[in-house]
Image 1 (tube, rainbow, N blue to C red):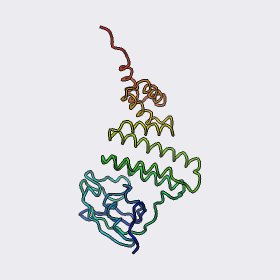
Image 2 (cartoon, helix red, strand yellow; image 1 turned 60 degrees about the vertical axis):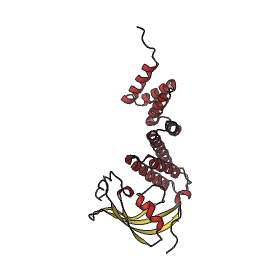
Image 3 (tube, rainbow, N blue to C red; image 1 turned 90 degrees about the horizontal axis):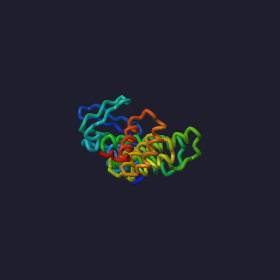
Image 4 (cartoon, rainbow, N blue to C red; image 1 turned 30 degrees about the horizontal axis):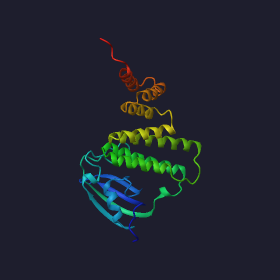
Length: 253
C-alpha cells in the first residue's frame, strides 16, 4: 500500500541475496539508500522504485546488475564471497519511503556516516573500473559532508569532516585521471589543498599534473614542499629528478 518511491526519495528495505546454489551472500534487515545515487547494486537501484511499501519482491539479477564480472570479496562480514559473473536472487521487502535526509539538517555524526558510505561506494565502483559511477559517488559524498547540520560540529567532528572531504577530493582527482581529464584532476587537487595545504597525496599529484602541462617551475615548488613533508618518498625524488633533467641545458659536444 502507498505510492512508489519518487526520484530523490530515500527507501529502507529488508534484503536477502543468494547465489544459485542457495548460499546467502546478502542479509540486511534495514538497508537505506536513495535510488539513483549508486549506493547499492543495480538490481536494487532499478527494482525497488517499482515497489510499494510493504511489498515483497524477488529479483533475479544477471551478473552486470549484481557484483559484476569480478564478483566481490568479503573481508569482514560473515557472508561468503560473491564469485565472478555470479547471478543473484534477491528477496526484497520495501519497509519505508521518505524524503532524502541529505537535504534535511542532520547531526554532524550522521553526515560523517553518510559521507563515508558514499565514498566507500565510490571506491567499489573505482575498483570495478566504472569511473563515471565512482565520480558520481564521490560527488554525492562531498554533498553529504557539506549539507546542513542540526548543530555545529565539535572540534573532533570538524577535523573528521575535513579529512573526509580531502579523501573524497583526492579520490576525485584519481578518477578524473582515469577518465583522462587532467584539468579536472588538477582542480580537485587544488580544492583538497585549500582544505589541507600539506596533504602529501594532493601535493604529489598536483606537482605531477603541473609537470605534464609544462609548468616546470610551479611543479618543482610543489614537489619540493611534498619532499619536505616526506623526505623518504622515492616517487617524489624521481619526479624532481626528471624535472631537473628536463630543465638542464644539453651538454656541449
